[in-house]
Image (cartoon, rainbow, N blue to C red):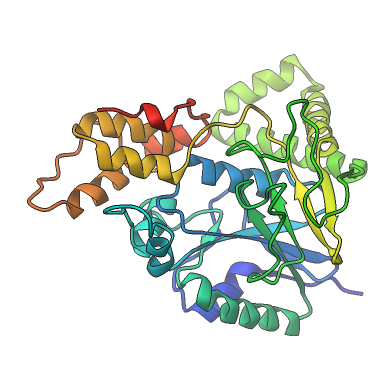
Length: 361
Protein backbone atom coordinates (compact mmCIF):
# COMPACT_ATOMS: atom_id res chain seq x y z
CA UNK A 1 0.00 0.00 0.00
CA UNK A 2 1.42 3.36 -1.02
CA UNK A 3 2.38 5.67 1.83
CA UNK A 4 1.06 9.20 1.38
CA UNK A 5 2.68 12.30 2.86
CA UNK A 6 1.56 15.90 3.24
CA UNK A 7 2.67 19.08 5.00
CA UNK A 8 0.64 19.98 8.07
CA UNK A 9 1.28 23.65 7.36
CA UNK A 10 -0.64 23.44 4.07
CA UNK A 11 -3.81 22.41 5.93
CA UNK A 12 -3.35 25.12 8.57
CA UNK A 13 -2.79 27.83 5.96
CA UNK A 14 -5.83 26.74 4.00
CA UNK A 15 -8.22 26.68 6.97
CA UNK A 16 -6.82 29.72 8.77
CA UNK A 17 -6.29 31.87 5.69
CA UNK A 18 -2.57 32.43 6.19
CA UNK A 19 -0.56 33.70 3.20
CA UNK A 20 2.88 33.19 4.76
CA UNK A 21 4.67 29.93 5.64
CA UNK A 22 4.10 28.47 9.10
CA UNK A 23 5.89 25.76 11.10
CA UNK A 24 9.14 26.39 9.30
CA UNK A 25 12.52 27.27 10.77
CA UNK A 26 15.03 25.69 8.41
CA UNK A 27 17.32 22.78 9.17
CA UNK A 28 16.86 22.76 12.96
CA UNK A 29 13.15 21.92 12.77
CA UNK A 30 12.02 20.89 9.27
CA UNK A 31 8.41 21.23 8.16
CA UNK A 32 6.09 18.72 9.93
CA UNK A 33 5.24 15.91 7.50
CA UNK A 34 2.08 13.85 7.96
CA UNK A 35 2.33 10.17 6.99
CA UNK A 36 -0.56 7.87 6.20
CA UNK A 37 1.16 4.77 7.64
CA UNK A 38 1.29 5.98 11.24
CA UNK A 39 -0.51 8.10 13.82
CA UNK A 40 0.67 11.70 13.72
CA UNK A 41 0.85 13.17 17.24
CA UNK A 42 0.41 16.93 17.67
CA UNK A 43 1.20 18.75 20.91
CA UNK A 44 -1.11 21.54 22.01
CA UNK A 45 0.12 23.93 24.67
CA UNK A 46 -2.63 26.21 26.04
CA UNK A 47 -2.09 28.92 28.62
CA UNK A 48 -2.40 32.60 29.44
CA UNK A 49 1.36 33.23 28.96
CA UNK A 50 1.05 36.65 30.60
CA UNK A 51 3.85 37.06 29.67
CA UNK A 52 5.56 34.00 28.12
CA UNK A 53 9.01 33.28 29.54
CA UNK A 54 11.95 30.95 29.03
CA UNK A 55 10.36 28.32 31.28
CA UNK A 56 7.38 28.13 28.92
CA UNK A 57 9.73 27.77 25.97
CA UNK A 58 11.84 25.12 27.69
CA UNK A 59 8.74 23.06 28.55
CA UNK A 60 7.57 23.28 24.94
CA UNK A 61 10.97 22.31 23.55
CA UNK A 62 11.43 19.55 26.14
CA UNK A 63 8.01 18.04 25.48
CA UNK A 64 8.45 18.24 21.72
CA UNK A 65 11.93 16.76 21.52
CA UNK A 66 12.25 14.42 24.50
CA UNK A 67 8.92 12.72 25.10
CA UNK A 68 10.01 9.35 23.72
CA UNK A 69 10.52 7.61 20.40
CA UNK A 70 7.30 5.62 20.88
CA UNK A 71 5.42 8.84 20.14
CA UNK A 72 5.43 10.41 16.70
CA UNK A 73 5.19 14.08 17.65
CA UNK A 74 5.29 16.02 14.40
CA UNK A 75 4.27 19.52 15.51
CA UNK A 76 3.53 21.82 18.44
CA UNK A 77 0.73 24.40 18.59
CA UNK A 78 0.58 27.12 21.23
CA UNK A 79 -2.89 28.38 22.23
CA UNK A 80 -2.84 31.67 24.18
CA UNK A 81 -6.03 32.26 26.12
CA UNK A 82 -8.22 35.29 25.41
CA UNK A 83 -7.58 38.69 26.98
CA UNK A 84 -10.65 38.16 29.15
CA UNK A 85 -9.24 34.87 30.47
CA UNK A 86 -5.84 36.41 31.12
CA UNK A 87 -7.42 39.29 33.05
CA UNK A 88 -9.85 37.02 34.91
CA UNK A 89 -6.99 34.93 36.24
CA UNK A 90 -5.66 38.03 38.02
CA UNK A 91 -8.95 38.98 39.70
CA UNK A 92 -7.26 39.27 43.10
CA UNK A 93 -4.42 41.55 41.97
CA UNK A 94 -4.50 45.33 42.31
CA UNK A 95 -3.76 47.08 38.99
CA UNK A 96 -2.87 43.79 37.24
CA UNK A 97 -0.38 43.77 34.38
CA UNK A 98 -2.21 42.22 31.44
CA UNK A 99 -0.72 41.85 27.98
CA UNK A 100 -3.12 41.57 25.05
CA UNK A 101 -3.19 38.40 22.98
CA UNK A 102 -1.41 40.17 20.12
CA UNK A 103 1.31 41.27 22.54
CA UNK A 104 1.64 37.80 24.08
CA UNK A 105 1.96 36.24 20.62
CA UNK A 106 4.65 38.76 19.72
CA UNK A 107 6.47 37.95 22.97
CA UNK A 108 6.41 34.25 21.94
CA UNK A 109 7.72 34.64 18.40
CA UNK A 110 9.43 38.03 18.29
CA UNK A 111 9.08 40.04 15.14
CA UNK A 112 9.43 36.97 12.91
CA UNK A 113 6.44 34.60 12.60
CA UNK A 114 8.70 31.98 11.00
CA UNK A 115 9.08 29.54 13.92
CA UNK A 116 9.19 25.77 14.41
CA UNK A 117 5.97 25.99 16.44
CA UNK A 118 2.67 27.60 15.44
CA UNK A 119 0.56 29.97 17.55
CA UNK A 120 -3.21 29.81 17.17
CA UNK A 121 -4.37 33.41 17.55
CA UNK A 122 -8.13 33.07 18.19
CA UNK A 123 -8.12 31.91 21.82
CA UNK A 124 -9.23 28.73 23.54
CA UNK A 125 -12.95 29.12 22.80
CA UNK A 126 -12.48 29.18 19.04
CA UNK A 127 -9.81 26.48 19.09
CA UNK A 128 -12.33 23.64 19.39
CA UNK A 129 -14.03 24.57 16.12
CA UNK A 130 -10.71 24.99 14.34
CA UNK A 131 -9.37 21.70 15.68
CA UNK A 132 -12.39 19.72 14.46
CA UNK A 133 -12.20 21.39 11.05
CA UNK A 134 -8.46 20.69 10.81
CA UNK A 135 -8.77 17.08 11.89
CA UNK A 136 -11.72 16.46 9.58
CA UNK A 137 -9.93 17.88 6.55
CA UNK A 138 -6.80 15.88 7.30
CA UNK A 139 -8.75 12.66 7.93
CA UNK A 140 -10.49 12.89 4.54
CA UNK A 141 -7.05 12.72 2.92
CA UNK A 142 -6.20 9.51 4.79
CA UNK A 143 -4.08 10.82 7.68
CA UNK A 144 -4.65 10.02 11.36
CA UNK A 145 -4.16 12.74 13.97
CA UNK A 146 -3.76 12.33 17.74
CA UNK A 147 -3.78 15.35 20.06
CA UNK A 148 -1.62 15.42 23.19
CA UNK A 149 -1.87 18.12 25.85
CA UNK A 150 1.30 19.73 27.23
CA UNK A 151 1.14 21.16 30.76
CA UNK A 152 3.45 22.33 33.49
CA UNK A 153 3.55 20.59 36.90
CA UNK A 154 1.46 23.40 38.44
CA UNK A 155 -1.52 21.91 36.55
CA UNK A 156 -0.89 18.32 37.66
CA UNK A 157 -0.51 17.86 41.39
CA UNK A 158 -0.78 15.01 43.87
CA UNK A 159 -3.87 16.23 45.72
CA UNK A 160 -5.65 17.78 42.76
CA UNK A 161 -4.91 15.10 40.20
CA UNK A 162 -5.62 15.90 36.56
CA UNK A 163 -8.39 17.53 34.57
CA UNK A 164 -9.48 15.87 31.32
CA UNK A 165 -12.02 18.49 30.31
CA UNK A 166 -11.69 21.14 27.64
CA UNK A 167 -9.08 19.93 25.17
CA UNK A 168 -10.20 16.50 23.90
CA UNK A 169 -6.74 14.94 23.98
CA UNK A 170 -5.62 11.33 24.38
CA UNK A 171 -3.25 12.21 27.20
CA UNK A 172 -0.98 14.80 28.73
CA UNK A 173 2.77 15.34 28.84
CA UNK A 174 4.24 17.02 31.92
CA UNK A 175 7.80 17.85 32.91
CA UNK A 176 9.66 19.48 35.77
CA UNK A 177 12.09 21.19 33.39
CA UNK A 178 10.50 24.62 33.94
CA UNK A 179 9.54 24.42 37.63
CA UNK A 180 9.57 21.85 40.47
CA UNK A 181 6.78 19.25 40.61
CA UNK A 182 5.06 18.35 43.88
CA UNK A 183 4.64 14.73 42.80
CA UNK A 184 8.41 14.17 42.97
CA UNK A 185 9.66 13.16 46.43
CA UNK A 186 12.92 14.28 48.01
CA UNK A 187 14.38 10.96 46.92
CA UNK A 188 13.34 11.69 43.31
CA UNK A 189 10.58 9.09 43.41
CA UNK A 190 7.25 9.80 41.70
CA UNK A 191 4.20 9.94 43.95
CA UNK A 192 0.95 8.41 42.74
CA UNK A 193 -1.48 11.03 41.43
CA UNK A 194 -5.08 11.22 42.62
CA UNK A 195 -7.37 8.94 40.57
CA UNK A 196 -4.41 7.54 38.65
CA UNK A 197 -2.63 4.20 38.58
CA UNK A 198 0.98 3.83 39.69
CA UNK A 199 3.75 5.19 37.49
CA UNK A 200 5.42 2.73 35.10
CA UNK A 201 8.56 2.89 33.01
CA UNK A 202 8.50 2.89 29.23
CA UNK A 203 10.50 0.44 27.15
CA UNK A 204 12.92 2.47 25.00
CA UNK A 205 12.53 1.76 21.28
CA UNK A 206 16.17 0.86 20.61
CA UNK A 207 16.01 0.57 16.78
CA UNK A 208 14.22 3.90 16.46
CA UNK A 209 16.57 5.61 18.92
CA UNK A 210 19.60 4.39 16.99
CA UNK A 211 18.08 5.39 13.66
CA UNK A 212 17.30 8.86 14.98
CA UNK A 213 20.82 9.16 16.40
CA UNK A 214 22.31 8.31 13.02
CA UNK A 215 20.08 10.86 11.29
CA UNK A 216 21.09 13.50 13.85
CA UNK A 217 24.80 12.74 13.39
CA UNK A 218 24.43 12.95 9.62
CA UNK A 219 22.54 16.24 9.93
CA UNK A 220 25.28 17.68 12.13
CA UNK A 221 27.97 16.72 9.63
CA UNK A 222 25.96 18.05 6.70
CA UNK A 223 25.46 21.37 8.46
CA UNK A 224 29.14 21.54 9.39
CA UNK A 225 30.20 20.93 5.79
CA UNK A 226 27.90 23.77 4.70
CA UNK A 227 29.08 26.30 7.27
CA UNK A 228 32.72 25.29 7.87
CA UNK A 229 33.79 22.97 5.03
CA UNK A 230 37.52 23.11 5.79
CA UNK A 231 36.97 22.32 9.46
CA UNK A 232 34.64 19.45 8.57
CA UNK A 233 37.08 17.97 6.06
CA UNK A 234 39.97 18.17 8.54
CA UNK A 235 37.87 16.64 11.34
CA UNK A 236 36.76 13.68 9.19
CA UNK A 237 40.30 13.17 7.88
CA UNK A 238 41.70 13.06 11.41
CA UNK A 239 38.95 10.75 12.64
CA UNK A 240 37.46 8.54 9.88
CA UNK A 241 35.05 7.01 12.41
CA UNK A 242 33.69 10.33 13.67
CA UNK A 243 30.20 9.71 12.26
CA UNK A 244 29.93 6.31 13.96
CA UNK A 245 31.26 7.59 17.29
CA UNK A 246 28.95 10.58 17.21
CA UNK A 247 26.01 8.30 16.43
CA UNK A 248 26.76 6.07 19.43
CA UNK A 249 27.13 9.08 21.71
CA UNK A 250 23.81 10.57 20.61
CA UNK A 251 22.16 7.16 20.96
CA UNK A 252 23.43 6.75 24.54
CA UNK A 253 22.14 10.20 25.48
CA UNK A 254 18.74 9.46 23.91
CA UNK A 255 18.52 6.04 25.62
CA UNK A 256 19.25 7.60 29.01
CA UNK A 257 16.52 10.19 28.47
CA UNK A 258 13.98 7.60 27.27
CA UNK A 259 14.77 5.31 30.19
CA UNK A 260 13.74 8.08 32.61
CA UNK A 261 10.28 8.63 31.11
CA UNK A 262 7.36 7.40 33.23
CA UNK A 263 3.67 7.00 32.43
CA UNK A 264 0.50 6.37 34.40
CA UNK A 265 -3.16 5.97 33.44
CA UNK A 266 -6.32 7.65 34.64
CA UNK A 267 -8.34 5.04 36.54
CA UNK A 268 -11.66 6.18 35.02
CA UNK A 269 -10.33 6.08 31.46
CA UNK A 270 -7.43 3.69 30.93
CA UNK A 271 -6.79 5.13 27.47
CA UNK A 272 -5.87 8.52 28.95
CA UNK A 273 -2.15 8.58 29.72
CA UNK A 274 -0.07 10.98 31.80
CA UNK A 275 3.55 11.00 30.63
CA UNK A 276 6.30 12.49 32.78
CA UNK A 277 9.46 13.62 30.99
CA UNK A 278 12.15 14.42 33.59
CA UNK A 279 14.31 17.51 33.43
CA UNK A 280 17.91 17.12 32.33
CA UNK A 281 19.09 19.57 34.98
CA UNK A 282 17.79 21.23 38.14
CA UNK A 283 14.54 23.09 37.37
CA UNK A 284 14.84 26.85 37.36
CA UNK A 285 12.60 29.14 39.38
CA UNK A 286 10.57 31.44 37.16
CA UNK A 287 6.96 32.34 36.56
CA UNK A 288 4.84 34.93 34.80
CA UNK A 289 3.75 36.16 38.25
CA UNK A 290 7.37 36.84 39.18
CA UNK A 291 7.94 38.77 35.96
CA UNK A 292 4.77 40.85 36.39
CA UNK A 293 5.81 41.69 39.94
CA UNK A 294 9.20 42.86 38.72
CA UNK A 295 7.54 45.03 36.09
CA UNK A 296 5.12 46.62 38.58
CA UNK A 297 7.79 47.39 41.17
CA UNK A 298 10.57 48.63 38.90
CA UNK A 299 11.91 52.16 39.17
CA UNK A 300 14.84 51.82 36.80
CA UNK A 301 14.24 50.61 33.19
CA UNK A 302 17.90 49.64 32.88
CA UNK A 303 17.75 47.31 35.88
CA UNK A 304 14.40 45.97 34.73
CA UNK A 305 15.88 45.16 31.35
CA UNK A 306 18.78 43.32 32.99
CA UNK A 307 16.26 41.26 34.97
CA UNK A 308 14.13 40.50 31.91
CA UNK A 309 17.16 39.28 29.97
CA UNK A 310 17.37 36.33 32.36
CA UNK A 311 13.78 35.21 32.04
CA UNK A 312 11.97 36.20 28.85
CA UNK A 313 12.50 35.32 25.22
CA UNK A 314 12.43 38.90 23.90
CA UNK A 315 13.28 41.34 26.71
CA UNK A 316 13.53 44.35 24.38
CA UNK A 317 10.05 43.78 23.03
CA UNK A 318 8.53 43.24 26.48
CA UNK A 319 10.08 46.42 27.83
CA UNK A 320 8.96 48.36 24.77
CA UNK A 321 5.37 47.11 25.11
CA UNK A 322 5.18 47.84 28.82
CA UNK A 323 6.70 51.32 28.68
CA UNK A 324 4.34 52.32 25.89
CA UNK A 325 1.43 51.45 28.17
CA UNK A 326 2.57 53.97 30.78
CA UNK A 327 0.96 57.44 30.67
CA UNK A 328 3.22 60.32 29.62
CA UNK A 329 6.17 57.95 29.25
CA UNK A 330 9.02 58.35 26.81
CA UNK A 331 10.26 54.98 25.57
CA UNK A 332 14.03 54.92 25.92
CA UNK A 333 15.23 51.34 25.62
CA UNK A 334 18.56 50.49 27.25
CA UNK A 335 21.57 50.11 25.01
CA UNK A 336 21.61 46.40 24.20
CA UNK A 337 21.95 43.83 21.46
CA UNK A 338 19.30 43.27 18.79
CA UNK A 339 16.11 41.43 19.68
CA UNK A 340 17.00 38.30 17.76
CA UNK A 341 20.53 38.08 19.15
CA UNK A 342 19.24 38.70 22.65
CA UNK A 343 16.56 36.05 22.55
CA UNK A 344 18.65 33.48 20.71
CA UNK A 345 21.36 33.75 23.33
CA UNK A 346 18.83 33.23 26.10
CA UNK A 347 16.85 30.33 24.73
CA UNK A 348 19.42 27.64 25.41
CA UNK A 349 20.90 29.13 28.59
CA UNK A 350 19.24 28.10 31.88
CA UNK A 351 18.05 31.07 33.89
CA UNK A 352 19.49 31.74 37.33
CA UNK A 353 17.39 30.92 40.36
CA UNK A 354 15.83 34.06 41.77
CA UNK A 355 13.41 34.37 44.65
CA UNK A 356 10.59 36.65 43.59
CA UNK A 357 10.38 37.99 47.15
CA UNK A 358 13.86 39.42 46.75
CA UNK A 359 13.04 41.58 43.74
CA UNK A 360 13.93 45.18 44.57
CA UNK A 361 15.00 48.09 42.43
